[in-house]
Length: 258
Image (cartoon, rainbow, N blue to C red; front, side):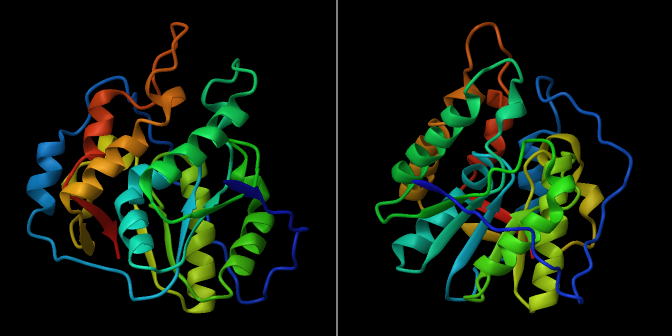
């Protein structure tokens, strides 16, 4: 169940510097084929296996579904091992279809259902309710929430800082700043970069592959299918996550920049 987190805008710790990512906008259309997943599998196949250090995880998600797409297998396995896993759901994703009244409530419900489908142990989801598309204007609120939720010194699992979506990049900037300031380990998951980027762009980057067993793969696929508003919205709306994009998240491992 997603719980609201009400935190007044905090005073920033004087050592926190938020790195702003002001590169040129990435223009891509997810309805069109992007970089083939076979290209990524070839590029990532030789990368080392990776696992977080034992202890709590804080999965930070710009929109409901990013946490399951990018780290659903990690969430399940870590929870089943008895570690504490928490999801910070930064927005409710209501801007995916601006004309869809009540989409925020629908997407909250989809997240609750997905986490219940994914894990037999309860995974707490904290809902920050920053307006979808406006994360960069609410960085102080986001950083304050992150600092509060990082009191247990978790490993942060965050979006990739050049993912191509402004909310993803703003969330990544905040997470990188807090991780640096508090000395926390951080792993970053791509979502849209799988589609619009090329493996060569990551030359020199350090990847870690978190292996998924068959049961975890099946549970992750079932959890992804809970996000019906993004996969099959109906009413002549184009899906935000078409089938060829979903393929990036059906591997027998999850890939993180570590």
